Amino acid sequence: MTREGFISDLRAMGLELAEREPQFVMFPWTVPVGRLVGAKITLAFQVNGMNPPGGPHVSPRLLPMNPVAGKHPNGGIHPSDLGDNWQYWSRPFPNWAETDRSGRAYMAHIRHLFATL
Image 1 (cartoon, one colour):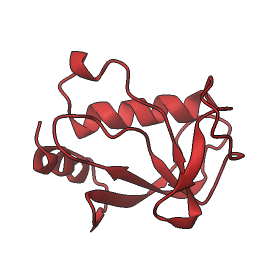
Image 2 (cartoon, helix red, strand yellow):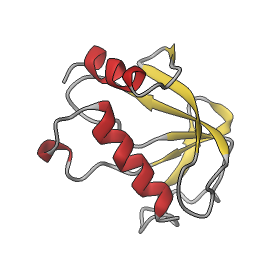
Image 3 (cartoon, one colour):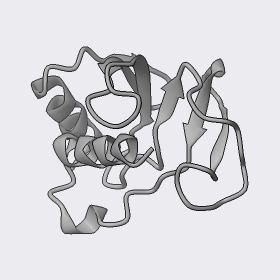
Image 4 (tube, one colour):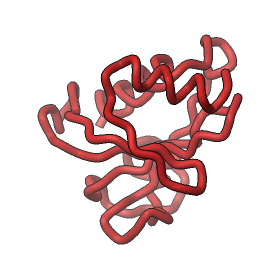
């Protein structure tokens, strides 16, 4: 799927996207599952084509920063290029190639991340 197709999928899900260079899309989101259910946050993805975003950028910061790779949610939490109130969760989508590579498939991955906090 192209960048434009991925973004179109997210919009079709009713998400109010804003684009920010380079290649970021961001939107408000209410966490639907897990221990943070109901939290109002902003998610940002760096969308660049056929590859999935490497992981979400999350604002406000929700987890302790821990750049050491490890099992979610304790490792791989980094500062984000988007600013001080953001963090980058290094959470690759392991089965991306087995999906339709859509925004909907990626959001299922994001929901899973929050369900496992």
